[in-house]
Image 1 (tube, rainbow, N blue to C red):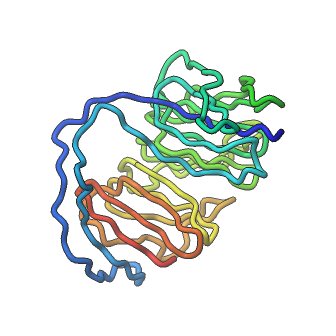
Image 2: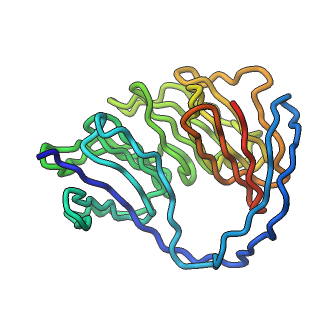
Image 3: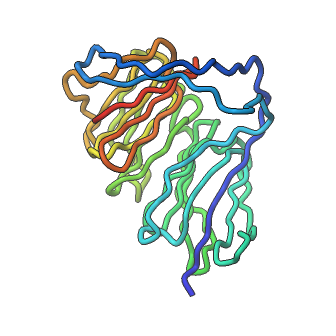
Length: 254
C-alpha cells in the first residue's frame, strides 16, 4: 500500500479592520514593464474576519514525496493519513517556538519556515514519520513569509526585505538579495511555469528572479497594483495571479 499523507500546520491570530471591497468590472491595465494584466476586484461571498489564518501551499507531485502538503500555520506540524475515506490525524510535530508560515517539499524531505526567522527540515521515514534534520535558527532577521523548493535549492522570502537561496541538503546559504523590494517587506513568493521565481512586496511590485542565480532579468518588475502585494499563485501553463492588500487581483501572462 502506498503511504499517502498530508502535513498541515495551524495558526491563530486576530484580524482587525478587515473589509470586503465591492465587486467591479474587470479592466485591462498596462504595467511599467510592458507586460499587460487584467485586473478585477472581487468580494468573497459571506467572508468575514475570523480567528484562523489559512495559508495555502504548493502541492507537490506525489512521485517526489510520500504525500501532499498543505498548511494553515502555528507551531504544530501535523501529518494526516489520506488512505482512508476520511483523512485521519496520524501524529504531530511540535516546534519549541514560532508559528509555521510555510512548507516546502522535495523527495524524502519536508521543510518549514517560521515567524521567528527560522528554517527547519525533516526527513520522511518509510511510514511517513518525520525525523528532525538540519535547521537554521536565524535564516532571516524577521518573519519568513515563503519557502519554495526546486532542483536541490530552497528559496525563502522575508519581512526583512531579503530573498535568499539555500542548498537544500546542507541548508547553507548560496545567494542573497538583501533589498529585493527596495528595502520593503517581501510578503509572498511562487515559482512560475516559466521556471522563474516571483516575489511580491510592499513596493507594490511583483518581481521576477532567475532560479539558480537570483539574477533579476531586465525589465522584470510587473506593475499594476497600487497597494502592497500580499499573495501570488502560479498557473500550470503561463498564468500568474497576484493580489494586494486592497483586495485587487491581477492576472498576468508570463
